[in-house]
Length: 135
Image (cartoon, rainbow, N blue to C red; front, side):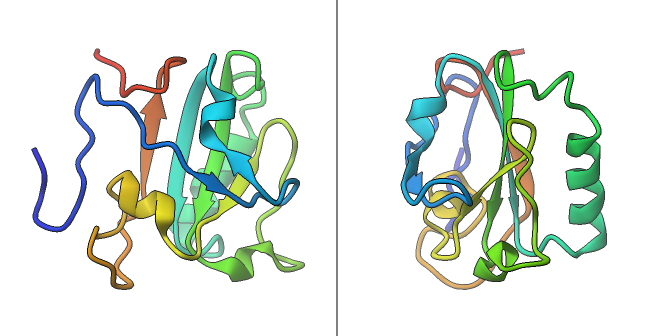
């Protein structure tokens, strides 16, 4: 069910594919990461306490985010995160998309479809077939 203005992903829904820059590639397609579990974390600024803690937790779990069975992608809504001193990529554990235009955030429910600056930080887990898994 959709909330007014936001996409809501339900169990079994496919992720909306998107292509965005990462720190390592100018054009990285989410679909190219299929075949393993994916964890997407939508956030505005990496220095915020909750975001910082989440990124530290992911960085501290390289046995989970090994890029073979499971990969993590931060989806940053603030291009400043990619400047020196911003979020760090630690391949394969930490990778980040530059979603300053909120393309992915709108597609996957972290930002309103109609535009605007609002962002709801949050997590999306995708099965290897790039669908929201059923429990």
